[in-house]
Length: 139
Image (cartoon, rainbow, N blue to C red; front, side, top):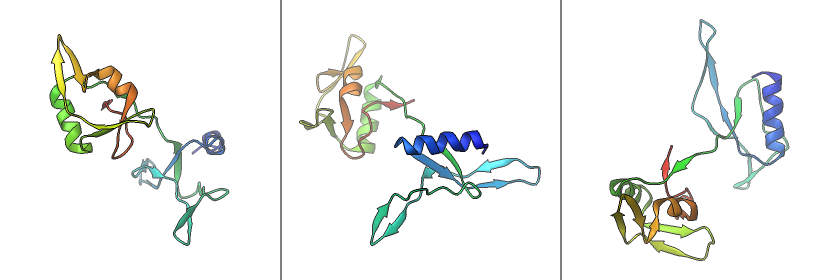
């Protein structure tokens, strides 16, 4: 990583943004290959993860600001069924005041409705209870 890239990561960390780390290898030809990205490591004390002042080791890891995941509305009934298989049937309204099971999926005049909400409204207003992800397809 360049010094400018390191500064961007450190500034994002200071601002409270999520940072990911990856180990890397350098091939014989000099190419840099990253392993899987994961959340930065924290010091653990008495089974409590402590956010240290600086958990960075630029000699052994590459770092990046965690990319924002983008979602789009479900398009087909089968997409919703697949999501239910992955997440379970329970969704939570963004207000935090309503948790419900998906009970109705309907395609009407080329508009997909989930529990009476258009798929766009469902994406904008609900998250899956099991992991907090948005109710839509990952782009």
